[in-house]
Length: 286
Ligand code: HEC
Image 1 (cartoon, protein in one colour):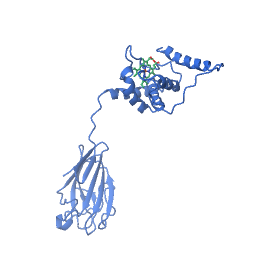
Image 2 (cartoon, rainbow, N blue to C red):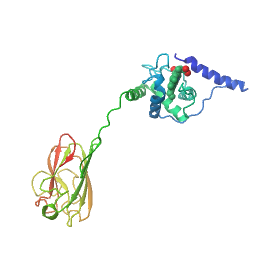
Image 3 (cartoon, rainbow, N blue to C red):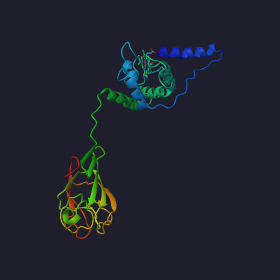
Image 4 (tube, rainbow, N blue to C red):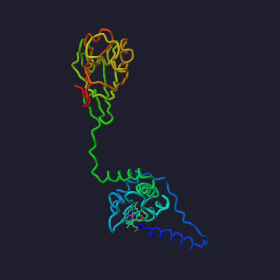
């Protein structure tokens, strides 16, 4: 119903133009060709360029500009295809500066309006409307995603990942070097919530082999990890001096664990730090 005549006028003029050019035969209007549109870019353009007249949610502004969609269905009988809609926008909109859009911009915003108008299905329409109502609300605060808890542990809270740099023989603490990142005898604790994926970048900075594996809270006889995969390769043989290894694991059960060197004799010497798996929270190291 709305502005049916307007589009009729555009078609009529185009037809007239062809007729006037001497082409007497019945000719249909051929709109210019446009590149494929991107509805997300179109929504952004709508917000900056069209919303001032058509309203923040394209519901129209009385006596300024018509709505571009209607509750519950198709509202634009004026356009027989997305191309004719694109051509209309390209030639006439924004009303304040017709012809100022590039073909790409016209295609983008037309794709958006076409979808908003229900022509791409009702679920697309509500998706498009959702994009508009989101941008008209204040943008949500950007969550802090990266936390550096210590110089050895970095955390991405949105991805739920933690990266631990674990250096065996970091300094001379504990009998000349039986430590991880300087920690030994459980005097350092890495805290990880259940569900976080932990990547351990292990490096052996000592002059003798070392390893690192996640083991239970007590005992000195472990020969392998208590969490599958949570170990450097062949932890009893160890990684040679200067060597590196990477492993990752995702703890699923809260509790007390240790990260220990399983080269024979080293655990007894206190070469371990604590790993505390908690049910929720943010990873940290202290
Ligand atoms: C300055 C105000 C204004 C701006 C800005 C504006 N429009 Fe319009 N628009 C109008 C008016 C007024 C009409 C009614 C038809 C006419 O006058 O050409 C209209 C009509 C339309 C129609 C036809 C609606 C129908 O039901 O037939 C579409 C589609 C449209 N505009 C899209 C856009 C898009 C997309 C933009 C941004 C690129 C935009 N408009 C920017 C004022 C505006």
